[in-house]
Amino acid sequence: MSLEDLKTRVQTALDKVRPALQQDGGDVQLVNVTEEGAVSVKLQGHCYGCPFSQMTVKNLVERVLRQEVPEVTQVINLQ
Image (cartoon, rainbow, N blue to C red; front, top):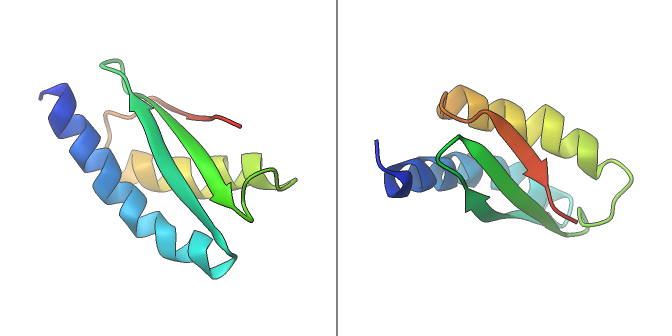
């Protein structure tokens, strides 16, 4: 699988997470995907800087990404 295919699959998975974040006035932006499966994201809106942002990334974003795209090895929250 090419890196572009991986990025496309990650973006599609993030689209499934967006509605939950948007309900709270936030969003998520894909920053980078490496060939090793590390995904960097940045929370936006009300989610950016929220005390629970790290939990949101681990418990929601990372869980969904790993379910949808098994090649994902880690999700990094850039702040």
